[in-house]
Image (tube, rainbow, N blue to C red; front, side, top):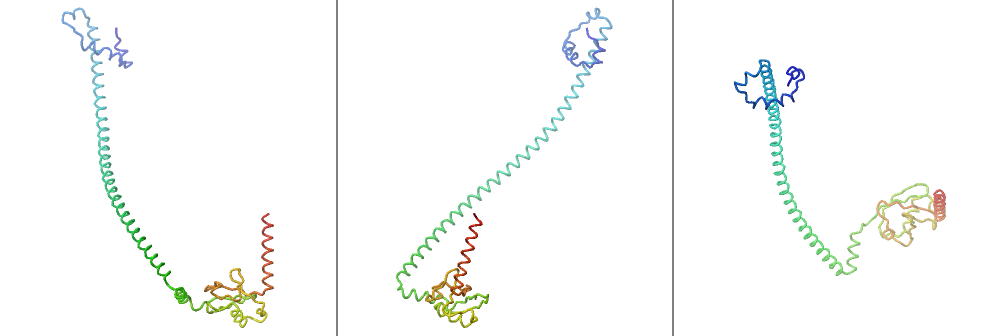
Length: 249
């Protein structure tokens, strides 16, 4: 009891699917046709047409699906082949890098051995030189030091009024004698005898010490101050430090 027109109108695939096996495997003999009306035969023929049409449509869809799957598979296959080539290239690159790393390690090991040997030789030379120096007489070492020390040292002396004069003297010159030379250059108001003193890096130079003992180096600037001014300068510095401490509080 099937309405062919309804199946065609509603495109009832499920109904056709249910009748495929019945129509395909039915056994209709000739003598049974006398009991079947023309309307029923026509209905069966129409049903068979719809089933065949459905099967042809399904066949076309399957062919299209297979074709699309084949295209996708081909693209995936080409991509897989490309990835395999890339993996092979990366493996070859890794192999070369490992070989390079191994060679670099060998070079580093060789360099470390050379550095150790160089340090050992240098230490031996240093120990040999120290032992040689220890065996030398003290007078000879002092003579070598004096020979290597500069014969003169150039420095500057800055007066209270901003006058700056360059001096070139022997390192063995005493500070007392240097003050005598300075007194010849600076104006009388800046060189009061017995009251002047020289300051280097915040330290007052002793009169009996030499330029070398006072640590005067080439290019240094010595400040020429009177003792009274030095005390004033110290008081000013002390007052400035006290003011800075008050600001910090």
